Image 1 (cartoon, rainbow, N blue to C red):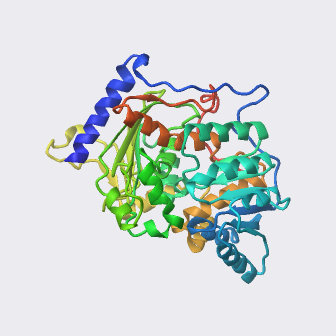
Image 2 (cartoon, rainbow, N blue to C red; image 1 turned 60 degrees about the vertical axis):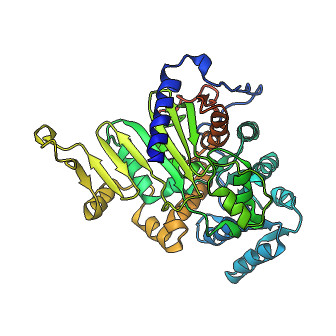
Image 3 (cartoon, rainbow, N blue to C red; image 1 turned 45 degrees about the vertical axis):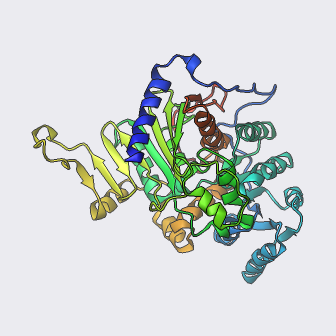
Length: 458
């Protein structure tokens, strides 16, 4: 009941605050002018790199796995590894040596990443540190001639988003968000169907990160993730649910985000976790559940949720609502299309839609197979693993595009747009769920590209 009330209230706020209110009622944020001589990075393609030298910074949960996974990706090599904990760096090196490979090792000092960024054998810095170190490492790497790929969330503040955008534009270096959920097999197939018009026009989408982290808090180095949640309010981890639906809605490729409204619960469970962890007894900032709604320039809407503090089952929602069809991943994977002869259906039949689940859905997904997912690549991805294979597909595409001098699937504007929700949601919450303007990180170029697409070598 509480969720229903909050959802209805958020819908009303979005409708009133975003569509009908005069612009003076929307909190507006400055868009810094682009520096003289700088141009945007839309469809930017760097010179091809035959064998990409990758330096992995941060070798905890995500980084250690990335080192192992990258050894299966063609067209690259792990050239260097780095972590403040020497034993983690040595563990990754031992794995590489076990496969007959070698890498330079940097460890021990908090700023040891700088030596890796200066290493001439490194072309791409792959950043898997705790969140607060993402941006400093990325900025230093780009300033020293390296492309960067940053784990999610790549940035936590608007200033950090602008810093990454401006540095990428000025240095002409890729700055990609490592959003693996954009490479989930269902999301990729639904995106292909949307691009082919199967759902009609996509007018609404939903995404979430609902994941009970009770068993995992202590696994994070120095309890950094629980500490971050205790100190910050808003949607702190938006991109898993947000990124894939933004691609389907062609954000900054024909449409743009304009307005955001957020609402949250009080922090009921958070203080219990900090107390159990023996952390400092201070007010817990992040609500147990945060909901954010956004509107686009072309009148589409998006709902995203964040909940890492309740026992709800894992759920990224992922829903696309079109004028002629629907795709949903949770709690049941299904595709629904407008049925023929719907005018003759008994009004008490509440499930008359043409629904594809199970075997019929599998057949449909084969029919609309994403162009990236060749049977061979899909099989290799599932064999190597990484969240069922989507991590491997993400790494494969990143390296493939660098090998062939192609634009990346996700650019620095995707990074900024998907990550800015954290601070924008906080601003909305701290102002009574007021509507907030979403900055145009492309600075006016959001409709120059006619739609999201993958690049392939000719």
